[in-house]
Length: 191
Ligand code: BTN
Image (tube, rainbow, N blue to C red; front, side, top):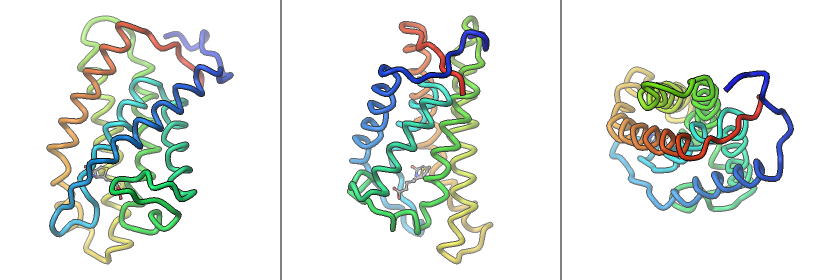
């Protein structure tokens, strides 16, 4: 994907893709597994965030997450467990939700710069691991103590409980994104 070929205008098709991935993230909200001692549940919605970044790229992927979060803030019960409203941003989940925006951007930014060719899957996986697992889980764990009052070190260690599931979701997202890009190269859009 050469930079000079990037267009900057969003076409109706881009808006459709953004809406589609926002809807996908909402649909994945049916899974929320509370973890003893943790203020934030294990969810599937971050898989949708990984897919949005890796398949749509930085700009459209980030817009899909922002669209989803605006709908949540407006009161739609789209967050896992049927939660919504501005109040969900005043909880230990805040850092993770902000992380979804940053994570989708980082995943998309990196994925867009992976040239087609050999070792495509491991490169996409590395992008998802960095943006999806490291950025989101770190930001989430850093912000969470502001609401729980817990020690940061304890929170960081506790949030390791998310890692096995998040790594599994990253592998799945990278497999799907690599297959989608091979079968149907999504034209890039400039940031
Ligand atoms: C919420 O629904 O209140 C917040 C969702 C954030 C959950 C985070 S995303 C990264 C990490 N992995 C999980 O499975 N859960 C947390």
